[in-house]
Amino acid sequence: MRSVAYRMLGSISEAEDAVQECWLRLRRADAAPIDNLRGWLTTVVARLCLDALRARAARREDALDTHIPDPIVHAIGHRPPGVEGDAIRAEAVSLAVQVVLDALEPAERLALVLHDVCGMSFQEIAPVVERSVEATRQLASRARRRVQGQSPRPVAQLKGQRHVVDTFLAAVQAGDLDALVAVLDPAVVLRADGGPARGMSRLVRGADAVVAQASAFSKLGLVSQVVLVNGDIGVISHLPNGPLLSVIAFAVAAGKGLEMNILAGPERLARLDLSALAS
Image: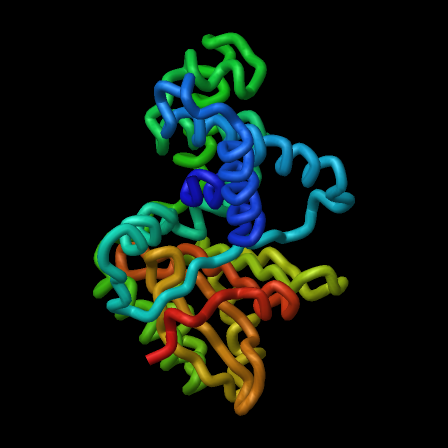
């Protein structure tokens, strides 16, 4: 349920609220006639997420804002055993894919997640999105094409990702612009979500433009730590003896950085659970 809600909402706190409300509804319901408890819970949490997405779309004033979903951050090698570990691995859809999911229409997103992630049939999903079975199938197909067409295909091996990220950080620290350009794909995309403050969020395309952004931050003397962000190699950065400045998720393929998705909004950073980084 938590995995479904996170994929639907891209917000850890909103996902937890949806799961909690779902359990409250189960406690108030007569569970005796429920033949498929898993399906019942999934359907209820899906409806709650759909309502939340529609409410979010209605109040969003600026559709051009760069928005990064909440990252899930863990230390490298952190693999809790048992149910908790299974839940963390289930949630670990890459942040690059989560960004594309976030841009889908609510019904598209729900149809895709329920079918491709939860394995629900279109007959089961259709009543939730209030469409015919064929229209629901088309929703999921259209959403799948968008996700496949717009999200990068990063390498699965963490070792290859780590090499690219380590090279990037070393080049930033040394101010080596040539090395920075060499480690980035020419069409690299940088998304930065700086929160509600005007001018803090941006979308940057192309290696030269991304290098210009990185070189500006190299002068701050940031303290960086390589971590796992949604299961891929990423970086958290602090100001010297200061607060958390950013969480960066990298998408890497063929030895090059394809995407950098950066959460830098102070309010949202303060709400992140970084307890898994404690030694």
